[in-house]
Length: 480
Ligand SMILES: Nc1ncnc2c1ncn2[C@@H]1O[C@H](COP(=O)(O)OP(=O)(O)OP(=O)(O)O)[C@@H](O)[C@H]1O
Ligand SMILES: O=C(O)[C@H](O)CO
Image (cartoon, rainbow, N blue to C red; front, side):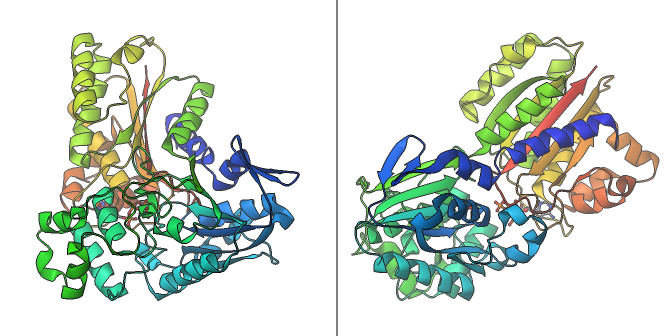
């Protein structure tokens, strides 16, 4: 690995380090005398604290919280991904102590709800209803929480609900659309968990894996008032032409105006304090800090990336071309257009134009692009983006060293064992010189296959499971 790719990996790893769950918890929560302090809010502990949690990063959050609460913690239940305890055997800081008071229930293999997750969700519901008034309930939430908290409304079965969500996902529904449907069909999502805990003080600590941190959609917002229109879920299913596969029982619930028990009607929950403890803004800040340490002039482009991977690779290619050719007006125009059509937080082009082009530059983007898989190959959206950006760079006759890293902060890109991959200005010509044609791999969505044979996998970003998740990071470096 050359120095430039080492730099990219170091910048990425520092981004991930900035959102490690145990650090975020320690920065947010502390105990002082009989008080629980969350950020600057003080909650008097009259009796005890109870903990429930669900999500891919909840293990590390819960372990740290137990350390912080000490004897103030009575007990807790958390649903965490299948096999996570075995996977993190090498990360002792994320593992519970032998005498833990929190029961960890593994489930939702491949991010799909299953009986284990359902049993865990039922235990969480029972714990909440059995805790006496005057206690504090701390709810830990991170991405993947929806699949780990499945209690379908009666008489919907878990299989029926899962089949519908799977079909919507395959048809290209966004996470906001999926979670709108989940909220309509669930006993705990869409604020209903909070309604069950009305007799308690509820503090929800959230690690966001949804673009722009909409609290009511992260893990389907179990402690956030639900302001969806009653027919929102039905309209989404109809948009994807899936009404035909919906069983009658489920259809009845979809068309109901209220669910009879817990239509939250946008009302405020004054017994609940929801707080985002980590998001991709923090990961960007960690990455910026490292890039600056390594001597790069650095800027965060946007943290709201949501475009299709094909479109995005062309956008990044155009961006690099305009920077390298110092095309001031075109760059300003591109940024203005993109800000109004796509990512409202896109940085001002002048920040980049003010850089000294004779010195190294680092640009950081964050979010979660989309990709419709049509080929039969293996890959992930990060690996495919890195390869597609390399193809864009190949089209320009560049003399500067341009490198691009794309990787998921959870360490896993799609159904593969890597976090993502690196691309660069000469990757395509290097590949072609040894008889490998990148376009063939892209056509078959086989980016993993490409990176496996190209330079023996040297351009993979391999981290293993990181124990956190704030979507993807993209890092571009331009070195004169
Ligand atoms: N062959 C492939 N090539 C490129 N991308 C793929 C391929 N197969 C699956 N994907 C992508 O992988 C993603 C699905 O993987 P997964 O369920 O791990 O989701 P994720 O978004 O990475 O997870 P999370 O949101 O929890 O971080 C989708 O974005 C899908 O488009
Ligand atoms: O669990 C979920 O709903 C997704 O990861 C978004 O938070």
